[in-house]
Image 1 (cartoon, rainbow, N blue to C red):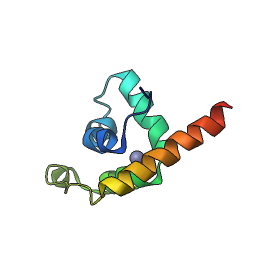
Image 2 (cartoon, rainbow, N blue to C red):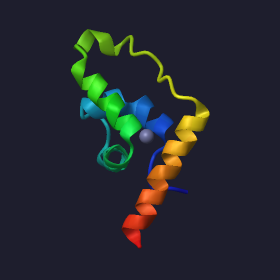
Image 3 (cartoon, rainbow, N blue to C red):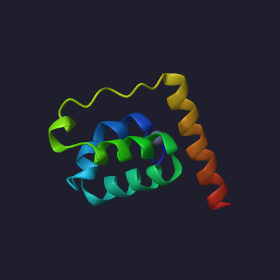
Image 4 (tube, helix red, strand yellow):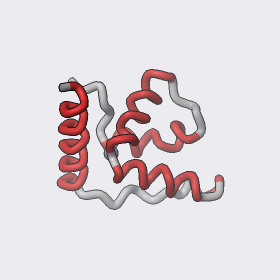
Amino acid sequence: MSLLPSCQQVQTELTEYAEGALPLPRRIGIWVHLLLCRVCAGFLRGLRAMPGLAKRSLAPPELTPEDATRALAEVQAALKRKNS
Ligand SMILES: [Zn+2]
């Protein structure tokens, strides 16, 4: 079990994260993920650039499972490097 949420979890909760609506432990997990994952950081930038009314119609991420798996592997590899 990983401390880090997956890209999918991050993107699902990104709106709430941006609004500060998540409990602290989840925000920390997402924050760390965003530091390490350019894909999700890009989503957050896009989210913040959007006017509030567009949040509701936020399109599902155009991310293939392969992309998501690779991005997560990169994050986990980066974390391992950090911890060692
Ligand atoms: Zn990610």
